[in-house]
Length: 189
Image 1: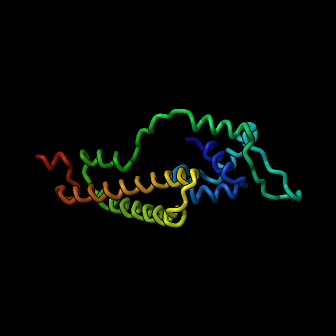
Image 2: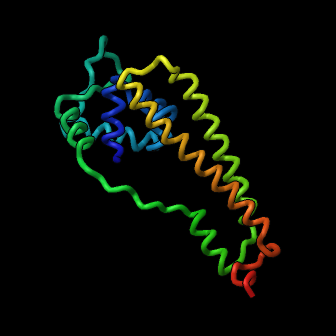
Image 3: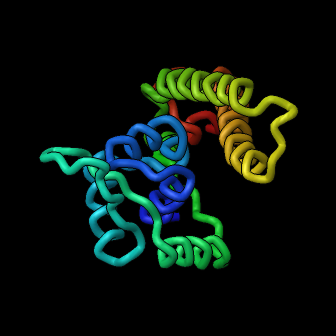
């Protein structure tokens, strides 16, 4: 996925200004594809220069008025092309997992507390996703667009469920390791 495609998606859902896009990213798309305010504005300029979007005409021209954007046919075609193209799954790169691997040779000092912190963060994110699901996807909301958006949310729910279960298991394993600062190699000696 790329930021231009995330922006095209958001603009096809609803023409918006850069500020509105930033807010929408914070509330929805940003859960799985984050971007800063500056990145969004920079990309809007590139998309406009590339002929994928255009600035909507202002109802009354005024200095300092925020620009709103909409997707042009070329932008819709690019998004459709990208959506249909095959992509390989991304390789997972997680610093926490690498730190656990390193702990096997240098010791576990400080790691258990960070595992607990991660567990709390994932529990909070899971609770937030479940609130969104309750609010935005009642059982009778089953239009194709809603079903696809719900599928994306379910991916987030399932991923957070995985992390909370895995971190709970990891903390149980930590409880069986030798004292703080030991290594896995020390445990088998």
